[in-house]
Amino acid sequence: MAASEDGVMAVDRTRSNLDEAIDRIGRTLALPSHHPLSPEQRAVLDCLLVRSQGAIDGPWQGAIAILWESPQSGLLELLERVGLDPKQDLTGRQLLGVRLDGCDLSGANLRQVNLRGSQLCDTDLSGADLTGARLAGADLSGALLSEARLIEADLHKASLALANLSGADLSGADLRGANLSRINSHGAIVTGAKLGNNEGVTAEEIQQWLARGAIGDTNEAQPSGGVDRAI
Image 1 (spheres, rainbow, N blue to C red):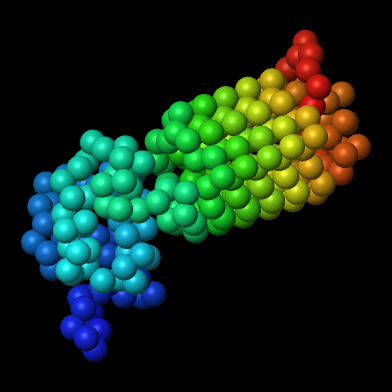
Image 2: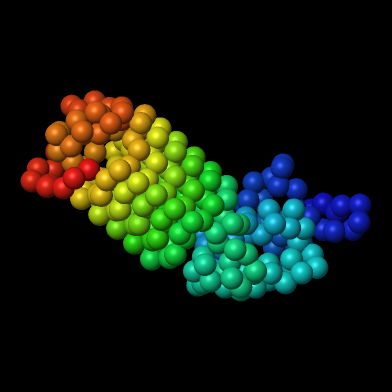
């Protein structure tokens, strides 16, 4: 734990990862350690430390205490309780394994966010900026992603079944192994998007993506057969 010249206690996150920061904060502030932090608590702590520039005393100590005492709270509820904005304060943050099912994150700035393995079923991400986001293995079934920016996003082995990707920008996105069953990608930009071993699409549909600039091997596709929709 470090102190700045003006006496502010701070976590130096340039030299320690989040696990180390959690351990040091718990010891320094004498917080209870009878339960591990949930994925949602960890994510919000990461956001708090960025906003506070590592400071953990003063008003930040109170926010951290609230966070520690709320193991059952959802991500958006926690963000509200500690005074953070979900549409601005999640940019580039570590949100591994969080649950955001059905949440409204339309228009949110989620550039470079790490949402690997997270639950985003039916989440409204319309118009959100997910450029460079890490979404490998995430469940985006039924998610609203219309007009979203998913440039260079990692969607490897993610589920996009029934997702609305109309008008989305998927330029350079990694979609290998992703479930694309019954998606709506009307008007989506797919230049450079990587395909392969995709569930829920026919060879004909894969060919349509390739004609629009996607990259992939049609032999790796797993045709689902009988799916009649415009991609």
